[in-house]
Image 1 (spheres, rainbow, N blue to C red):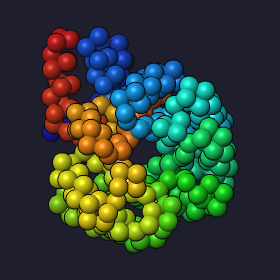
Image 2 (image 1 turned 90 degrees about the vertical axis):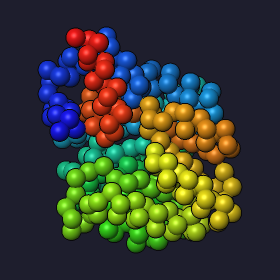
Image 3 (image 1 turned 45 degrees about the horizontal axis):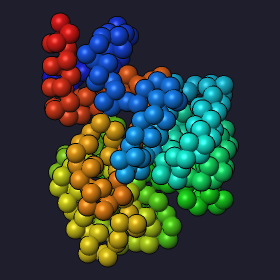
Image 4 (image 1 turned 135 degrees about the vertical axis):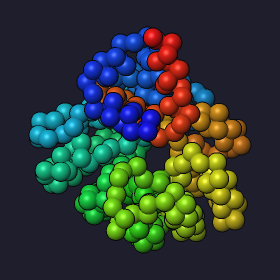
Length: 306
């Protein structure tokens, strides 16, 4: 019930204004989102890198419905990559890009052209790009664009979602030498015809996909906060003789920072997914709705505010 309320609040401009201005809730925003500006992203990235973490930056931007908006998103990434290189934050920091933000929903060629420009800029900056995955209706388009980009930019990373029934097959296709693949559970509402519905089935799929990627010749990126799946990832790395330079863990900024530090201390590569940009509010509310602990943290802040 509380999760439903939070997700409803994600669509409320009045709630957004409250969260943006209330002194206690500003602390919550800073816990999960670097900030609205590029400078905020650089500040948070610098601190994380100093703590031994790798970083991937996601510009949340605006919902893209026009070519002009898509171009603005591209330009933000080009500027970001230039600033990261100038600050000496590459190659520890890469960028994550949603093709929908580059115009995928109305012009796939435009999205590809913009993504290619970002990949060129990443090469110049000495780092890499990962293409985020969205709902299942965009999976084929995203993978098609990925393969085209990899012709000239082979380090471009893919994201596969374990809750989709097709993902085991996609893992086999993308487990080749040099292929960077982020494996996550998946965060969109999908029909039963294309996605597993129970948490147990999603977890079992995640492990099957993890084994495919770990046994392949690529570079697995295990995106999970689940203690059991992290432990399985550590075990599979030992089983397949993968040193810490041949795979990595990934977690969201603000989620389980102590576990991120523990894994770094144990010698693993941990990449923190750091969002920033004007559209931080919807992202924040989805993160709060995902975990009861986050909801309790939010509720305490609201009580203090009242």
